Length: 546
Image (tube, rainbow, N blue to C red; front, side, top):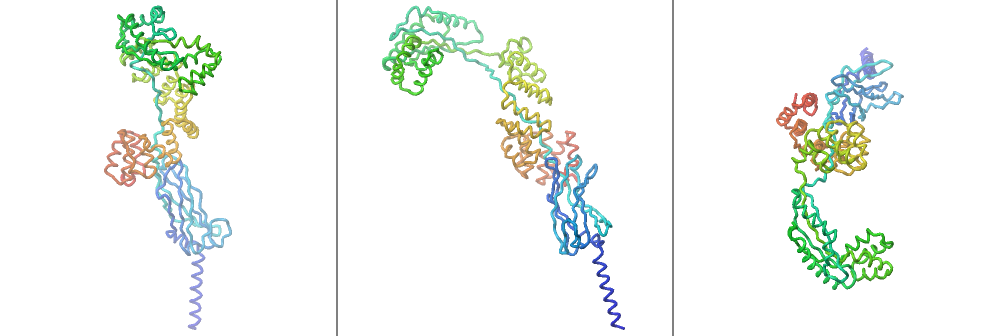
């Protein structure tokens, strides 16, 4: 009897044990033993996407051999929830093609992906699990929290774009010269009276007389420069040039006594090879290219003359047409023209804009603050001079006003579509969200602004290291953000005092654990309504603004 009782107890124990092993609901009762960890621990939006790797860990003797477990990752946020692609696992006796979990347990890595929508910056990643057994569903009684989310800090990148206006060539003081020359006979240093009565000298005298009445022009001095033609012995020619220097100085003193000449200096330059080359270059001599090649090949005066004399027919032409023009002395008066002052330019824009040349118009546009006034001045330069710089600068004004289509229309009218044009077109494409097109423009331009703008595209597309490489040391307002996104808040230096800068400084302080500074900077940033709203859901401040 005792033996039978013991056998019955043993049978009952085995039956209970078998019933326990055969019951998949035990998986639900032990749900807290399933661990799901996320990398990163806090989700982050990168290039409009939320991606993470989660490790699902099952302990030994947890998974029923005939059960299937479906785990659905769900991103729950203010405004809704989104389900991700399910993870499905099977026990050892299931013949489907799901991921196998043996009785020894397992850790399986899964990838999750969500497209960002506004509101997800304050969210939670959870898992909803259901055991499937013999056609029946047994849901886990509670969601499993996986991670919080999501950083959207990259969205602080400023995408207005970097561009600079083209500079004008306006000069406050313009150097000018008045010049005349006298010619000598071969091997002579005597000034012929006819030379002092030439049309060239008369015009020079008249110009100097007129200068005395010109309030904007001032004579700074006069140079007398004497030469010899490059023929014959070098020593002889140097002496001849020196004698011509003296005779020219005496002659100048005779006819320029009552003229404003400034301080007079004299110089003898010897053989005039430079003048020779210029006259030959501008001549119609048939073999001029050969002559110029000889000049480039030899620097020694004697060798040059010998090689040119060897071209007998050519030398005859040179002796008749070129060499006589080099037996000379030049009178060169240096003058400074005082251009319109800032106030005069402003006044002329209002009273007589037609008086201004292209450079003056471009300068005048920089002197007015009103953007419409700038555009009016640039339009004048475009209409009158077909100025590419005016077209481009007017496009920049429209970019400042966020009038992208107007800017593009002006850029397309440019004749010279080089780097300034390409960078500005890239800025417009970037503002329109055409990142690939914008990057092509920036990569085809070698200006520093294009490199900075390319870094913006890098940030928008999640290439944070590349962005920092382009921005590091530039001082651009996106540089500190690039440091933050690369995990270097200690290197992020924000110099501006605007609300945007204050917000960045708050992020930096939060990442350093400096709650006091963070709150102070957020107070400054909150002066801008969009930042005041953003900070309430920004996970950067989750531990500080609880």
